[in-house]
Length: 549
Image 1 (cartoon, rainbow, N blue to C red):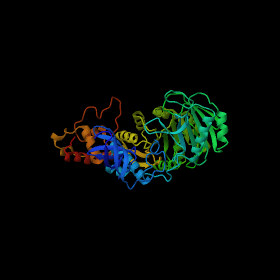
Image 2 (tube, one colour; image 1 turned 120 degrees about the vertical axis):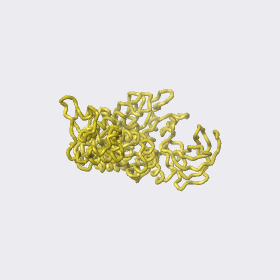
Image 3 (cartoon, rainbow, N blue to C red; image 1 turned 90 degrees about the vertical axis):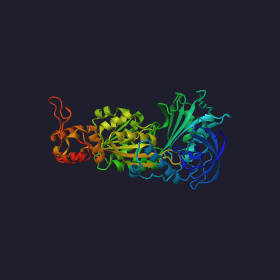
Image 4 (cartoon, rainbow, N blue to C red; image 1 turned 60 degrees about the vertical axis):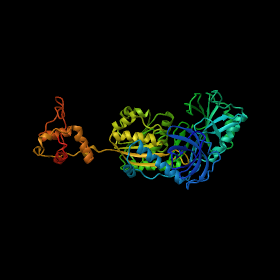
C-alpha cells in the first residue's frame, strides 16, 4: 500500500475523535466523515508501519446510521464531527468511548463496568444549545474580515455565516461587529506578523434570562472605538447587558488575557440554573449547555446528598454552580477556585440566593491541605470538576489524605478520568457508579460523572484456632504480606500487620520482634474483643490452604 492508492473498505468502528476504522489486507486505516457500516472507496494519504490514514472518495453502500449533513461548512470546520450520523449512533459511540477508556486505562474488567456504568444521558436539544462562542477574527487575502472556527488541526479560519450549535442571535451580533471593524478600519490580528488589533469575538448568553455579554479580545491594552461599538450593538440588540474589552497581547493559544475593561453595562450577565441565579463574568467557567448541566447537577445531587449531613469540598468550583446547587440539601459547602473573579462571582451568587452554608476561597486546588486547616473544615464528600488535563497525582494524594467517605468526579475527558480513577483505586477507593452525559451534541466531547467510595477498613475479621492443630513445619511458610493478600483475595477484607501479630501472639506463634511492640511508653492498640472471637476461622482457613502463620 502506498500514498494515493484507492482501496475499498468496510467501516467497522469509530475512534473517540470520530474517525472511521477499517482494514485492508490486515492494515488498519483511519478515515474521517464515515459511519459504522459504510462501505467506501478511500484514498490513502499517509502510510505507517501498521496503519494508514485515508480520506473518503466515494460511498458504495451507506450505513443505516448515516444521515444527511445539514451544515454547509461541516466538512471544513473543526467544530462538529457527527453531523453525518444519527444522534442515536453518536450517543452510543460516546458511551462506548467512556467504557473503552475505563477498560483500557483504568483496567476495569467488563463485568465490573457492566455493573457500575449506566446508559448515557442524552440531550433533548442537539442544535443551538451553546451559551458561549469564542471565534477568531482574521483577514482574508482579499482583505475581507473572516470570523469563524479554526479548521481541524490548523489555524486556518473557516468563515461562518451561521453555526448550528450556537443561538441564531450570535450570528447576527457577529455580523454587526464585522461591519464595525470595516467601517472604523480596525486592523485584525495576523498570527505570522504578531500584529493587528482584534483577535477574538467572545459571546455569552443566559439561557433563562437572555442576557448577553459581548467581549472583544484585543492585542493591546487600550479599548479603541468603543463608543461606536456600543452605539451599534445596543441600538440593535436590547438583551446586551455587558460589553467588555479583554486585553491579551501575548503570543499564546490562550484566548483571554488577565485584564478586562467593561465599557457598557455590568461586568457580568445573570442566568438561572437549578432554580438559582448566577452572575457570570468573562473569565468565569460556566457549562455551555444549560439544560444538560441541570441534568448533570441533579445526578451529582442524587449521588452526594443522601443524608443532609454532608460537608462538601467543591474543587475547581468556578462561580459556585455545583456547590450552591447542593447547598440546601447538605450541611455545608466549601468551594476552592484559582480564578479570583470567579470566586468573587461565587460569593455574590451565594449572597443573592440567600445561601449561608456555602463559602468560597481563592486558591490552587493543589493547596487544599493548608486551605482546609486554615478554614477548619473537615469534609466527608469531595467533588472535583477539573479541566481536561484532570487531577494531578499530588492532588489525588491530598484528597486521599482528607479521607472523605465519597468522591464525585465530574470529567470532560474520559482518558484523564480513567487515569485518575485508576490512581484512586490503588489508594483504596472503589468506583461505585459511572454516568456518561452528552453535554456537547454533534461534537466528539462527552461529560462523565463518577462516584467513588472509601473501602470500609473497619470490616476486618479475626479468627481463633488452636495452635496445636497446625503442623509445626508449616508455621513459618507464609509471610505477613502473603497472609494479608490471601485474606483480601479470599474474603475481600483487610487485615493489618499489627492485627496478624496480635493473633499470632495470642495463639502461641512466633512473631517478628517489633510487630506488636512500640517504643517505651508507647501504647499499642489491641484487637477489639468481638473481632477476636472470629480469629479461629482465619487460622483454620490458613491451615487448610497451607498458607500458615
